[in-house]
Image (cartoon, rainbow, N blue to C red; front, side, top):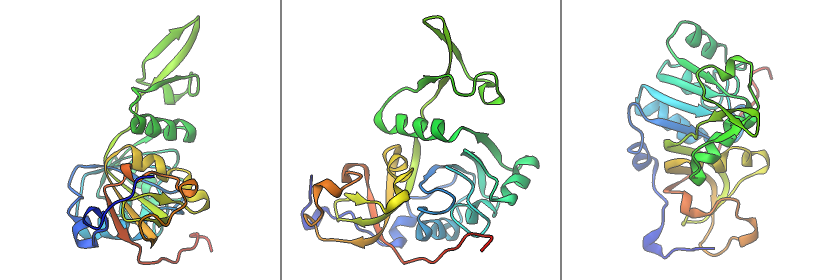
Length: 232
């Protein structure tokens, strides 16, 4: 696994990370229900003042958890997600026309992001045929069977949360934080990783690395976080 010399370190401060955000960007956010989303980078997104952001995330988080903290401010122009049920404000913004929402089945959403990350031009699936999910999507016939074409998803900026990482950007995710974080990193032009523990180059066992550093542009030291489900 690649390592780096001191002058190749990708570790930056939050002030420099804020410069990556911009109005109108497509933002890919790791995590599931707020768990595994990078809290420090989301707080930075809020304080940066950027607006008209096109968010791609598994879900809308909750009003006080995950990307939901940003969505409730009304500064997301659109959201592509598998569900928004934990965030009633997201539903209000959708129904009022203040935020465009595109729903995708969870597996389809992740596969669209993965396709974007590995350079595929989309894929064919039977999932969603005959449902509102199919509206506006190309229908293709292959060997006498009908399939929906699902386009890849790519983003300008991806923000992810890792348990451990080295200065080159090789990352280790904790438990279910591995579910969407690697794909959001791969499909973004610029990925920023919030890392709980930054370890010296060469100290990670290659077998434990879950995302190679080639997909990571910047690393910030995590500030620590405490969270709980909204109903707790």
